Length: 108
Image (cartoon, rainbow, N blue to C red; front, side, top):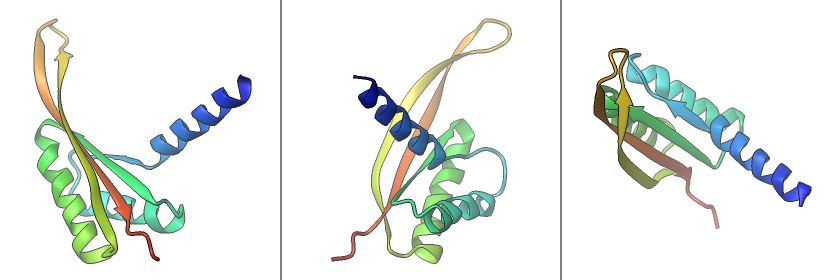
């Protein structure tokens, strides 16, 4: 039973390692991070996550990576969601979020 738990933790650590959180920096900063994940860590999949106004930057990042830098990558999946957030004043607001899963094409 303990072996299964260790394996699950390893998988979750790898997922967190392959996740790029997009914020307010220019898209090329995140493009560099994604390309680094693909090349130096030999990752087959990278997840680009963003919320709110950063969603367009995340989409730009994914498209720049796909079209210019890692041309053998494809969009495997896109998840969109709405998250409820509470600010310092206690008010709740809804914030949109996106997860873009990029993976390398399998070479046969």
